[in-house]
Image: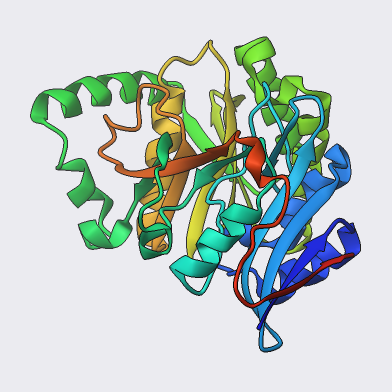
Length: 322
């Protein structure tokens, strides 16, 4: 016998998430999502399928009022679209996955979904964006082996660019929390209104995330100094032997510094024998050239109004509103 729980209470949503959500990546952690939830304050709408006293599947949504759709919790937005990646619809079977989707309200739009594989057999997904990954083990944790994968012509060109920077002296500093504010300013200077941080809500949530990562010894801040001046700052996090590079900022006076800091991330991950480096979605004209592995993420959209009420499903006992 199945029971369906519809949860609209944030404290209960937290309990449901912490008890039932798969913990595979940084974005699966409740405190990471909560940094954005506290700022955006979207009403949660969690749908949970229970069977024999156990959770069998869950869909975590939030109502995004200004865009008039339900997005994946916590409904953080930039230019009307959510940002957090590797979203999921955890379910024990294709039938439960189908039931969750049938129960989803009209105007549901879930972005950045991991490939659900067999669970969504027969569903039509659209490609959303492509994430880019680096697996140090594939190069035997040797940066030099990775470097040899570039053509000789590319290596010469990149070396010339990097040597111009190194001629004035390149140094690094790490894990300086105050450098996160500097990174945010550099990013805004470079991208202006196109920066995620041009939205005060996103800026506040990201600052809270940096503080939480720092307090829990997960934050990795990499700062490049050239000739004693800060040229680039990147912020990332290391959790579950995965290094996620979350954001960065560079100074235009130092052309090529983005390549320098990205090669530094790759070399460091090899030395640390990291399992996976996640550079997130967005090509920005360099990730393919760096021979990173693409990982497609998907989108599911529902606009038909027939999802406004519960389907007549066998064994469906009741709906409880929390």
